[in-house]
Length: 314
Image (cartoon, rainbow, N blue to C red; front, side, top):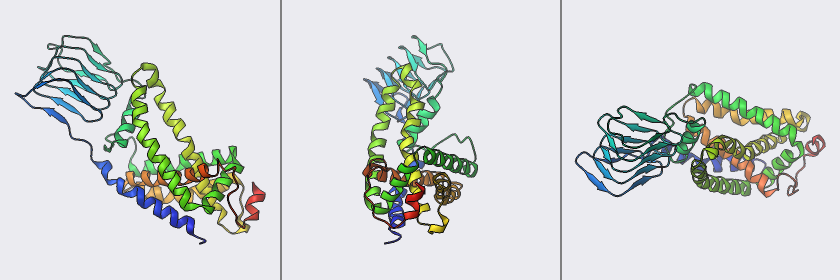
């Protein structure tokens, strides 16, 4: 049972891994073909819309892009997606994009007002996040996958060091809870992440309804990552605590080395399969998050182990 925490990590990763290949495909576009006339409103969440024929109503998408090449006799609205009005298109209502921007190739067929010709700050992050959660592929890469993986591993390690400096006792308690109840931690962390992912698109969608809400999207995303940073730090402390007592380290250094043990292989995997590395990274952080929840942030002593050196260092 000495390595039961490692078995739980592998088991938990297997639950997450099958979802990674789905990230390479997105929803197909909803197309109103040429010579087709649709009576009523068209509404999608993240599915792109292409209007080649005629729509007698409004065309709306929460996060999907909208391309109008034909006729729309109502409004065209995409909250975080981009809108393109092609030459020869006719839009009798207003055109609105809160965050994605509006590209007008010809204004001859426009009858209403155009709002949102330039995308707002933070919209790219919000749209990319919702796209990943809904299974779309990431189109824009700011860094090569290998470099991005190393940068991500470095940032995550620094976050673990910062968390260990702020909460040395709590992160040690999370690590002990993880070793004491690895399977329970994995189950609680996995369910918590599923609930968060289920609620996040709707929360982001609500924020996009107002300009003030759009400003809060990036801080919200950063705030939601704090529990995962704490969870990853707990995993790092649990790994460091399994080393011989003579290797006992102070909490920040233990967190840094423990984090590198799990993040370095993920950086290598990320050079070839970025989405798999991201999925495994969140799986590990969720595992630690589960330990934090069952131990009330590392404050509840549910463990019984024989690491007196670890207790003294905390």
